[in-house]
Image 1 (cartoon, rainbow, N blue to C red):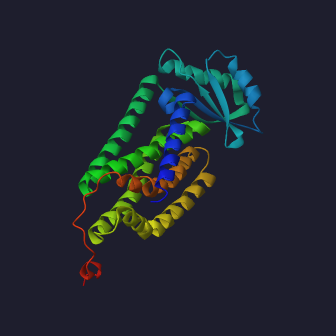
Image 2 (spheres, helix red, strand yellow):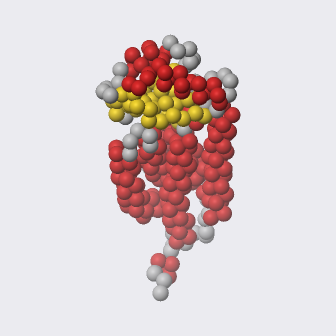
Length: 296
């Protein structure tokens, strides 16, 4: 706990940078949240993005964005939602097909209306909020209210920094990202519960030990388990990021960051916060041999 001030400074800097990026650059919301039409095409050779952009930009469809999608031959075309309902969106696809002709292969066409996108965005916020509230209540009943507050502070830290990473790199923020955020929250709470459980056990066992020393001992007791678990999870996620393709790259990237930041916060944020939470302690006394002896 000697470095708790350093950890707090690093965490506050990460949160401040994440919020700054969110309010200045914003998130690159996917079609799930903003509505519109998405078309994935494959050209015969490496795609000429500039020529395709010039070709589609003159069709009068409003905002049209193109980007390479994994393979140099694959192009992702995003077109803003059109006035006139679903029929107008279908007409957009026909206009694009007529402009590009048979020179490309149409691999995917998706359409999300404005009403659906608003509902998905709202439901995503509700899901994250409900998950955090449920975790707060669980920690409260499982431990004490001080542990619950510390766990939620660490959880909010993880969610905000994850959003900051997406704002920084402008990855698509869509429904799969919301699923990743919820998974990150669960992973972070799981790690935090493991550490808190050892803290609670040591609070009962070492009643004369100073809190900072006790917290250091509790972290050291579970550190190897936490590092090994996180490392094995990262190996699977790295394989998913490298080999899984462009479609799930945003999800796997969010998960990689979440495992790293969740491991950091459970050790370097949640436990140090407990120092300032006035934990209840039993009367001072050395641990008895019976307390330290294994149960028969």
